[in-house]
Image 1 (cartoon, rainbow, N blue to C red):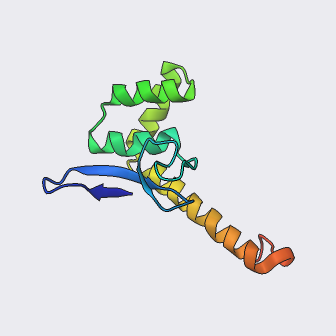
Image 2 (cartoon, helix red, strand yellow):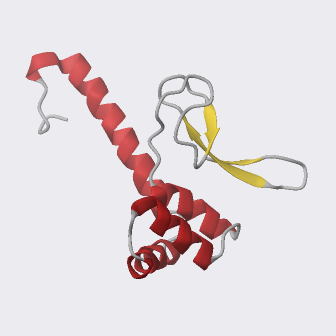
Length: 119
C-alpha cells in the first residue's frame, strides 16, 4: 500500500501485518507491533522505490544483489524486468496473497470436501 504522508505529498510504502493489521514500512521483515514475520519479497521493496524515483537503478541492483545473493549481472537483469513494469511485482504479490486468503477461507468453510476445482 502507498500512502500520502504529509501536506507536501510525500509518499511511503507500507505492508500490512496479517497477524494484527499493523501498517509497517515496506522493507521491514517483522511487524513493529506484534513481531510477526511479514511476507516481503525483495521485488516488493524494489518496485515502489524504483518507480517513485527514491532509488536509482544502481541502488536497486545493489540492494537486490545483496538481499538475494544474485550476482551483479543477475541482479541487473532482474531489476531491468522490474523497471519495465512498474507496479507489477506489488500487484502480483498482493493478488497472490488475496487468493491464498480466499482459498484458506474456502477450505475452512468447506472442510474435508474442499476441492481446488470447486474453488
